[in-house]
Length: 228
Ligand code: DC
Image (tube, rainbow, N blue to C red; front, side):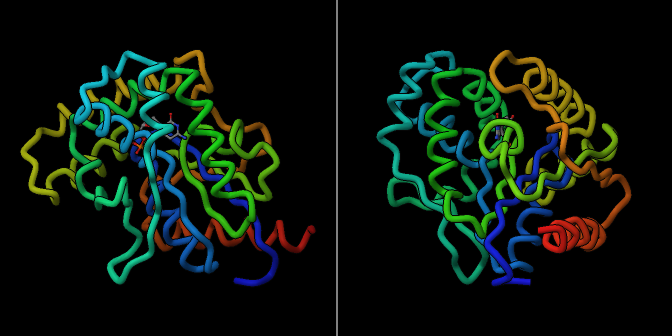
């Protein structure tokens, strides 16, 4: 379908709903760029740790982000996140960064600069962007809006399996508790809380393999293209 009009595709949903995998597969199939906005909040949380900026210091975090060079670079092993010339693709997945990203994302002054950079990245279309507020705040005019969700148990199982695959030692119960607290923070914060846009198509990914999620998303995209 690549080349049939450069759409803006927004994918939102909670932790472990399968957004990033779905967005990566959809972008690859369409020949679009994938922007994982959670990775941007993670990169800021990690940079703050390294530079001694507190996760509670909104203005300090904003100033830090404004100085950060951040790029999604396509490579032979998939897309890499490069921050100030260093490859941070793996470093931002550490468990302490999970919590930090959720904490830095509550500050309205941080979200303002994030959203501005995300809009600049997607302005030309031909983009699949995933996060929490893409269909509601970043691109309310997106051509396609998807809201992915899955049962709490399945989301916890997926996150636990990912952590184990990375060699981390953690219990399923600990992952479940962390997901619950991130859900509460992401959905309960005052600034751009996680919510489905009224015109988003909801997909429940519980029990679905990534290929089935991809097919369901492609069906929505095709429908939208036919209606244009
Ligand atoms: O999707 P993720 O787990 O990598 O996101 C990390 C944190 O960043 C998440 O807890 C909430 C925040 N986030 C956000 O507030 N808005 C986005 N568009 C993306 C992520």
